[in-house]
Length: 137
Image 1 (cartoon, rainbow, N blue to C red):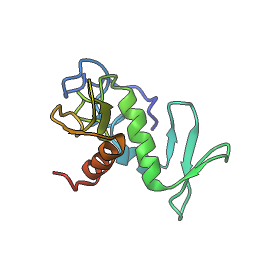
Image 2 (cartoon, rainbow, N blue to C red):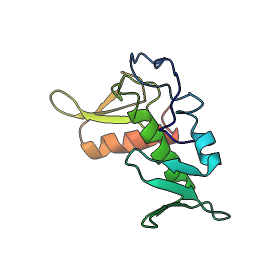
Image 3 (tube, rainbow, N blue to C red):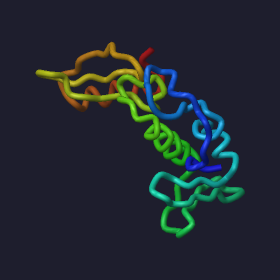
Image 4 (cartoon, rainbow, N blue to C red):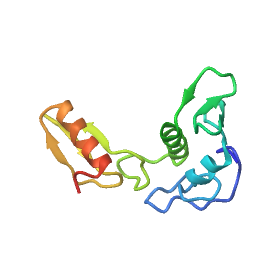
């Protein structure tokens, strides 16, 4: 099972009018892809999980990443197929940090438009990290 497998997914339910759903059994179930032990990323690189270490290697043996980074790589690849703005998509895998029109930066949760304004980029990234780890609810 790879992201290139085809299905008849309905359009994204999160306000997006194009693309595949991230909860689709073929394209969006990251756990199922991880369980298969094989993945072909959007750049065409083939990955295989090695037992018992749980590390992932590309077939050309150039790169090696751990399980959590492989999960993030798959989630990012799947999200790129949806095609909507990260700020509008409720399935976006990471918080959004962007420049405010004027002075400051904001960090917001996936799919939400309410955000806090921070005077520096570093503070906005720190806030985004707290959002990602669940410290800011």
